[in-house]
Image 1 (cartoon, rainbow, N blue to C red):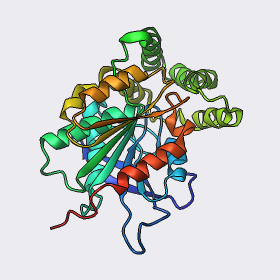
Image 2 (cartoon, rainbow, N blue to C red):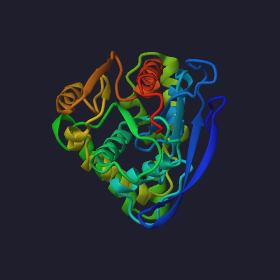
Image 3 (cartoon, rainbow, N blue to C red):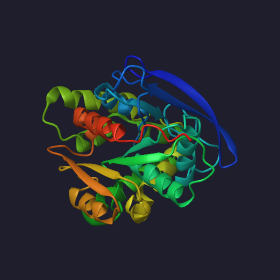
Length: 311
């Protein structure tokens, strides 16, 4: 359950890769309206690797004029794993299924953080290539937060990524009990949290570590986790950047070691309608370290969406 007041859970039935899947999502209603009785614009948020909807709670608290819809991806949080291997298409189809049940009267803002940026970008590119037949709202604009813009196995982080790959591979091949202990070990989860957090605020660091301790191991099966990791290291936003012919904002941290700023600048050069916003002094956890900025950006982008596209 989301810790944000006013949030409500909704489950939808979807068919992903020929299999039925019940997707859990959370709705955060807008707390302010541009005018009385006017429907609020909406944004759909896609969480990052090993995360779930809880990771978007701080953003939800800081977003005022936009309705937020936050699903759990297959194999994470309250959404079960699929009975077949999880691929990039699996995650794209899951978000497409969520979009299909939303009102079609107004375009929506699609938001993806980190791993979620890969999913969001590939969905947007596919939608623009074949716009008919999905159902639900059109994509009005795209916000990519700490996007994965460069291959994980290239550049300065390739050694760390290689070690991480060995870690997840061990988690998928060890006996079940040993694998579970390895993948959920509190010391390892804390080490990951320490590496990603850049804030000097002790209270915020405690909050980040607490959130990772609570929710970083909410995956539903080690094979699903390994498959998600493979997707996160084999794909990037840059693969489809040239096809993203819609307003696309990149929100990047200037201290992000996982998705470095130089890669984000290069990504923006590939985007037909790209804009770069930089969160100063922030790393890969913008959703924790700069939620107020993120909420403002979401409200700004959502407010710029056309109000009505109904005939």
